[in-house]
Amino acid sequence: MTEDSGRSKIPSFLLVGKIIRPHGVRGAVIVEPISDCPVRFEKGSQMLVDYRGVLKKSVTVVSSISFKGRILVKFAEIQSRDDAEGLRECDLVIPQSEADSLKEGEYWVHELEGMAVEDENGEKLGEVSDVILGAHQDLLVVSDSEGHQFMVPFVRAFIADVDRESRVIRIRPVEGLMPGKRGKKEGNR
Image 1 (tube, helix red, strand yellow):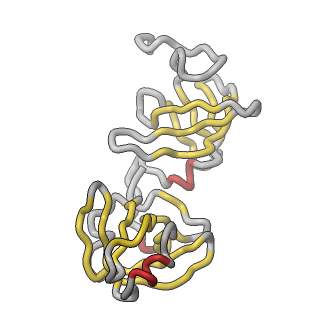
Image 2 (cartoon, helix red, strand yellow):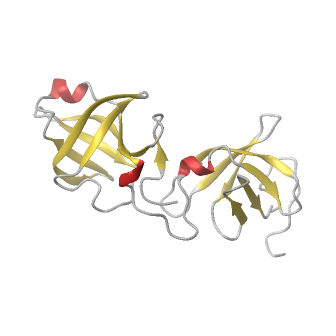
């Protein structure tokens, strides 16, 4: 996965962060960054506030600092705690055209969601219902037709192929990875 990998509910916009809550009385907010682009929250950066699929306003970063694993951000347009409170749990999005280009082997989260998941023999195992972004590796949450879910680490050891055109991810099943399915033992590749 890569920079701005989340997806807004608004088509052609990408999720770059989520406003968690206000901080202080001057309108600062704590943001959970979704983007791994190092300049996304630098002074002068602009983004849009998305509240459940409705664009509320454009905001410009005045300052930002790292804060307990998140980012403390002050926007020019937000002057008070009351203003900031109105942004609680809102998403921060950018137009998809402003995102960095993807490199070989990188994918947007919204591309992966909904893709069919098959084993290397073409047996359908389910589809990607969610992507959990992690510090060391990302996880695909796969839901099968019976409502069971399992997670697949999004790393080469488990992912055989991602076919964007046919919207299929082929995985190398490992024993114990999928409920009710038997895969190869970890050492047999």
